Image (cartoon, rainbow, N blue to C red; front, side, top):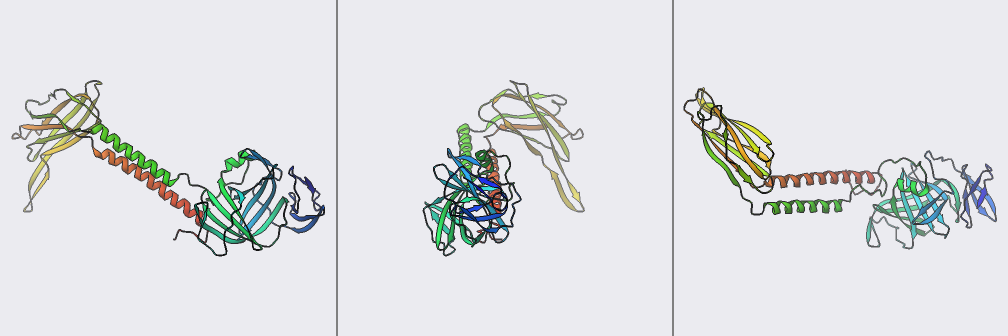
Amino acid sequence: MELTCPKCNQNTAIESSFEVKSFGCSHCNSFFTYNNSKLKFEKAYDYSPKDAILKIGTKGIIDGETYEIVGLIIKKAHAIYYWREYTLMSKSGKVKYLSETDGHWILLEEVPESYDVSRKYKKLTHKEISYNLYEYTDTFIARIYGFYEFEISGRPVKMVEYINPPFIISIEEFDNDDTTYLGKHISSSEVKKIFNVSQLPSKSGVGLVQPFLFNIFNTLLVFISFAILILATYIFFNMGRTEKNVLYTSLNFDEYKNKEFISSSFDLKGSPAPLVVSASSDVNNSWANAQVSLVNEATNEEEYAQKDIEYYSGYTDGESWTEGSTSTTFNFCGVAQGKYHLVIIPSKQDTDTSNQTMNIKAVWNESSVWNFMLSLVFLGGIFAIIFFLKKNFEQRRWENSDFTPYTE
């Protein structure tokens, strides 16, 4: 089917065939009604879109069937918001609609259901899915392209939109007749693939029914599953696990002056856990020092730590004071199972003649629940971030709606 515009003498052609009642020239801004095989000029629109549009006659495959773009109406609301509505027709006569706003796309089709929109009901239920009222306004035509099998009026059409991303129920009411459409978000990459085009309007903001990157409910279920798995793993590897004393000894400073103490070998079995070393000495206004190495006998790998023991006391301005302690504790974290021994070098302040020994105790503890708690905190932190990103995403979606559920 092909028509020549009487105003610019340019042809607009499509392969689809149906009875045409309205026609918009694809090359100029003229709009015509079509009757008795004649075009009657109705008006010239003054709106020209800035972004690239899909051309009349472009074909694409949707759900395994070829559709052709036979028409495009650019609509506006509130005098400043514009969007495009493409009419797609298949060879079998099926009709779909493709709506684009700020680079976001929705694929719609007419459904038989009818709903009372005489009042601004906040909720609508369609096939057991609840939708929230987003828009209730009059729409106007800013530009028409292509062929239509119905007469297009210049009068406003009431539009009511309910959303439950990625779905939308759109209801148009004109002269007491209403038409209901069910739509779903479709990505720009899918649109490019369908119509084999490389350039589409760039995205801006959040789409009307653009889905968030994550489904919050499903994400929560995944995180809970991970937490249960981590807990089960912790219980499995530590069932019946008790702490193991691997060393308790008293070292004489004179005997081990500039000399190493090497403990007996000990076997550790089970999941990784901290090896806690406690050192104490009778320091008094003096210090002592413990240098401890943990040696893995299978790999000869060595972990090293040292700690000072200091205790001071006295009187200043008639008041007594103390600083430090006669004992200290430090950890070798995450010690895995294997065969080990400890190498210890004790030392003390040379002027402290009364302090003779240092007591050393080493215990391989039960696997710390701290790691499990850290995992929960980590998962909870990630979920909290996703939750607040989702909330911000939804607030941006609803910022242009008079029916936003978000209050400032």
